[in-house]
Length: 241
Image 1 (cartoon, rainbow, N blue to C red):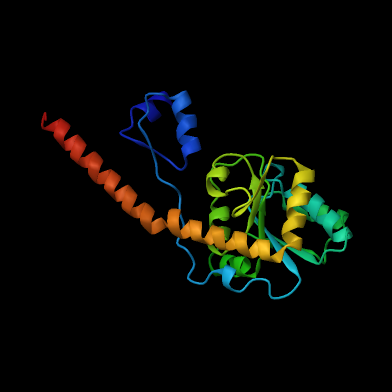
Image 2 (cartoon, rainbow, N blue to C red):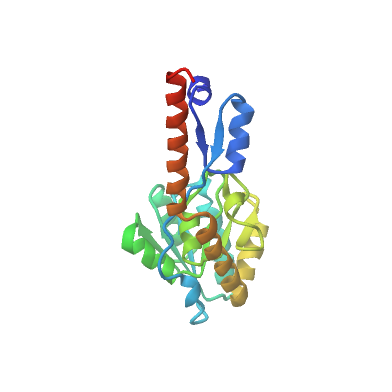
């Protein structure tokens, strides 16, 4: 690992947090930040959300306790019992049978829909139908699902782990909580369910952030410039300059 990181011409980190973390373990590594990115969808969900009073919540990720899916089911059940007209779509693979067991246990068959592994057009359709994206993970690096959800103008509820704080600014384009904080999770989800204007405002802020800082076409340019620099630098070393 030491050779891998410290002998490389450069180590591309996806966030400032990761750059700092790698530097603490491998201080001689040459690190640069190039953010992950997506191709922003042509039509943003922020333009047409809030058509009715139903609130559609989306989870997309590995179906496992580490992703916080069971915390979501628990909090979702409380809100349903309080009378909120909410629905949840879950996409991903993993502990599918355990997820289905939890749905039956809470009698949420009419409220929670498991979609399996989805991508491409189906994923875009799911994001367009959503109002809130939730990923209450206990550990992450930089989840692409959050970037994709922000690209469709969805407000985010996630956790202060990995590079997520570099993606989501608390109270600006979503809410960040500590992993396992069920009370905080409940309060923030309830707030977004109740406040349609807040969902729209946060969604628009997230969409703007994607266009400004996480457009993959800009990443292409940054990586191309980096490779050209390395090639010129290596060539000079070979020529003894």
